[in-house]
Amino acid sequence: VPWLPATLGSWSVGPDNYSLEQYLFVGPRGGGDYFRVGIFAGVHGDEAAGVFAAIRFLQELAQDPDLARGYEIYLYPLCNPSGFEDGTRHSRNGRDLNREFWLASREPEVELLERQIRTLRFDGLISLHADNDSCGLYAFALGAQVTQHVVEPALRAAEKVLPRNCDATIDNFTARNGLIRKGYPGMLCAAPEARPRPFEIVFETPHHADLEKQIEANLVFLRHELDQYQQ
View 1 (cartoon, rainbow, N blue to C red):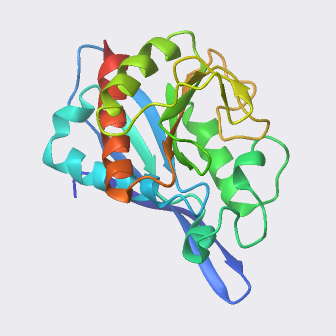
View 2: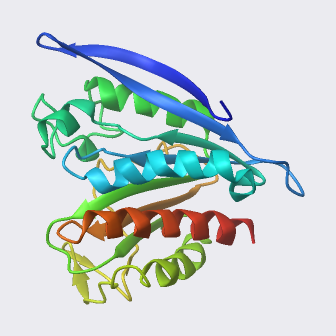
């Protein structure tokens, strides 16, 4: 296979066993060093669009490796397998995993992902989510100063599939043209000590929109995100 699968670890919840899967795709060499990017989906188990988009993106990379030219892409398509199985935002332990990062969490999913984030020292992290209360697409643009300039063109491309949320307040944060520059404590991000800060992006689709359109918006966003960062 063109991508390299790996199981990072496994754990049990009651009688059921779960594991965290990672897929590595190394694109053709670009003009310089490889950029290392982590893509994370399914941190909330009831947000299926990002999970399906991540899997479809793996298939796209296999068919068109040039999408990843100059990149090492580490893809984590299902970060909360028990929540996905149950159709719940939380893991089966009852935890919102996206409020657990870098807070000494003992949740196995968080511990495994923190270890990868700390070890691999990504140049960029992209998380795929869906928002129950949003009428359109938006993104958290965190980390490196370049982030906003990378996100805006990707949002512009994705809003051809679904509308953008241009409210002044989104998810209790001040927003401008669908961009938020702050994040929640405990959300999946680079390690606190990481310097320089990578670009960190959370892309949100409207959860009540058509599933196929959410998947396509995620794919369009990912393609443009990688292209813009290279530029």
